[in-house]
Length: 323
Image 1: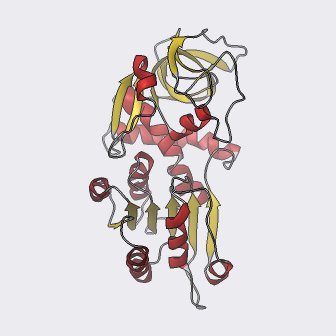
Image 2: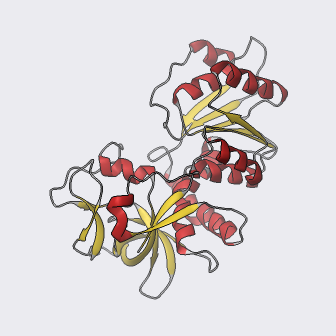
Image 3: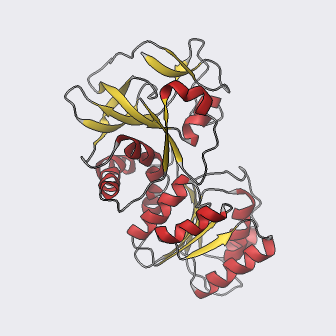
């Protein structure tokens, strides 16, 4: 079969022949793959930098952790891969499949799951979002951030504040449900004062953070109390596009009712993952099929995988490989 194969970690996948995977137990099923999104997770695994990366394999390995495929009986499904998914065929787990609604196309469906996991799981399970709460999304101009705005709105957020560097995309978030936009290109002083003013008027209940680094430090300093009672803020980190470490003053932790947590592979419980497949993903696919959730994608053929693997995709689009 044709597949996107990494022979040496750190190099782009090659379009090459690779042995078709074979099911080894009753929970594994072979699908004909139709579309797979290229995500930061997959890039991290391919480069060896992600904590879930495979060991070096001299025969190479197929990249891609999930995708849209067709079962032998013609049923279209989203599924997590046991083998790499950017290939003509892939092995998937029977208990980690979601049947797709008719009105959603393969590329749209492929683009969504990683972003849904990176937003809905944080909002629902780590932040415990309730209707009428105020949500700050730090780094909302990326694909996952754009979806997080819409899902937070769907979950009942009263006010959504977003930050980002891309001015054009930041403005477009107002159409997706954001109420306040804050540029990360301005000075630290202006960023702090603008966010502090909002926080004093409508206390921030939830922070969904895709950046970490310096902007997270400023946001945490905005939350710092002055000795009076403070509202509870749940700060959930999901990504570290601006750096993997921060400086955090102990005074902040002592001065505010702060819950600091992360959301990602290994942090979710088995029950939460079950709900992702049984409830959350089916609901989000249905919303997208009705155009209630909007996604921004660009497609590429699998034969162009090496050229497009590290391509810059503008305006927070997600690159989807079609097979």
